[in-house]
Length: 366
Image (tube, rainbow, N blue to C red):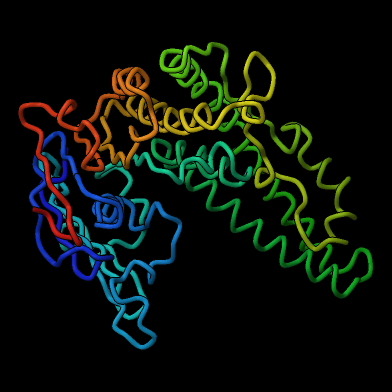
C-alpha cells in the first residue's frame, strides 16, 4: 500500500491543494522553514489522526496564531493497493473527526492497520536522551502497532490508574478513617491495577528481548559498536504486584499518587551490561534514535508480514558519508518512503529511476 495523493486545507503553511505522491520514493527538497516537514506531518496525521511533533491539534491550523481566527483544518490521503482507499481527518470547531471511505470512525485504533507509518525525526532523540516516560511511549507505540490486545490493556490500565490516583488524592487531602468506604474502593482498584499491570509487564518483557535482538545487530552494523541492547526494568516484580501495592499504600495515600507500577517502568540502553547513553557521544545517541525507528519498522514487518510507509525527516543530515551508506543499507523493507533534504545535500545520489522529487517553497511544491 502507498499514499497516492495528499490533500490539505489550512494545514500549517501548506498550500490548499492536492499533491500526487504515487511513487515508491518521494523527496521533498527545500530550505528550512519552507514546509518540508509539514508534508510529512500531514501524511502522519492521516495515518494516526495525530502529530509526531507533540503539539495540540489547534496548533496545526494555519491561522492558529489568530486569537479569534478560524482554526479548522483537514488532511486527506488516497491509498493505493488497499481496501481502505481514502482517509480524511478533519478538525472543526475544536473537535477532530476521522473518516475512512466516507464512514466516520469511532475509535482511532481502527486506523492502525490501514497505512502503518513510521517517522524518523529529530524529536526521536527524546527516546534516548529524554525522560523515562518518553522511552515508555516509544516501546508502547512499538507494541501497539502490531498487538491490538496490548493497546486495549494499556488503555484499561491508564483508565484504572487515573481512577486510583483520584482516590489517592482524596486520601491525601481528607485523611479518611482506616477501613472506610474509600479504602474499600482502593482495594477493588488495586486488584484491577495489578491484573492489567502484570499483563503489560509480561508483554513488555518479551517485546524488549525481541526488539533488542533486532536493534543490537543493526547498531553494530552501522556504528561498528557491538554489544548494545535494550533492557527492560519493571517497577514491580511481576509475581508480587499486590504485595508491592500493599507495602506502598501508606506512601501512595500520603502523596496522593501511584508511586509504583508499569507507568513507572524504565527502559535503558546498555553496552556489554553497562549503561550506554550517559557516556555516548551526541553522534552515537543520534544514531541510537535513528536505529530505534529502523528496528521498530523491522519488528512490525516480522510480526505482521506487512511493510510500513517510512517518513524520514532530515535523517541523513548529520551523518558522514560512510554512516549514511551504512544506514541506508539497513533501512527496513517499505512500501513507500518520503524523505526531506536541504538543497545542498547530495540527494541526487540516493534517487532511483522512478523517484519523485519536489522542491518545496513557502508551502508549495515546485
